[in-house]
Length: 371
Image (cartoon, rainbow, N blue to C red; front, side):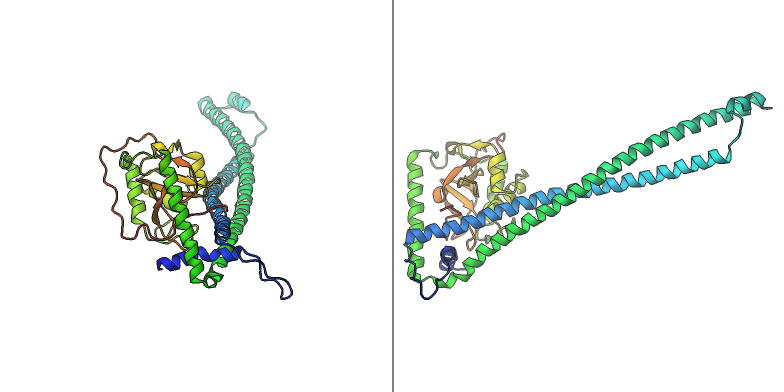
């Protein structure tokens, strides 16, 4: 996809956020200014991003719940099999007792026996059989209670699984609807509108980057190195540059923003949560001044976008539909903060940044915004 067409995909969504064409008798709405159009575009993409992260979170919950349901089902099956064996054993002992029934007690038979030693052996066998019967009855009672608990838990897990599946479908439908609006409006923008919006995006990104660097919040270039796993995660992310953004994707052919960061760190042997919100919520925070390559940079108030820090004020990320994994200025999107997946790992003494392909910084820098 050409750079211009990528920008067209990003810009095309703006008309989807506008109201439908009015009836012939109604006055036409005033045309939007370029800043208003950009705000509408960002709003539409934010709606898609929130739905995407909801989908991703639900997907992870479903995976865990499916595993739990499978375990409960297996435990229930084994418990029921054990119950069946215990019932069969209890029945066998009951039949044996019935067939050997006598009016004499074991003590009386011992007194009247011609062979006291043989009778004593029988007495011990009878006492052992009684203990076995008591143990089987206790096992049956315990097994039946466990089976009841497992059956109840299994039913509840299946109910939760169905609820999550419905939530996942709703999120998927929301994302699909937003992206369909983008596709349907792709051809409605003039070349002049595309150029104006592209220019505005680039200007805003450049201004934001200059303002951030002027604050001194970032260390001077090249003063920090990654940890060993951080370097591995960063190298993996660099290898993905040029691959398309696809919502809900976590590789290897395509990625969304958190799919890229979670797969990069998993490849480095440090699994992290799947979604940008959970990465922000659970991983240790680090100030921007302490950023080292491999750390994760999180954006927007709801933590709906994430990138991996490359160093020198740059990040690697999967920006949005219609774009590809690329290198962007760290301030291309509104910063929320940064997190470090391996806070206990030491920085490397020496480090060579990954080699970047030609055109690694091409295309739109922006992820999602709330407008």
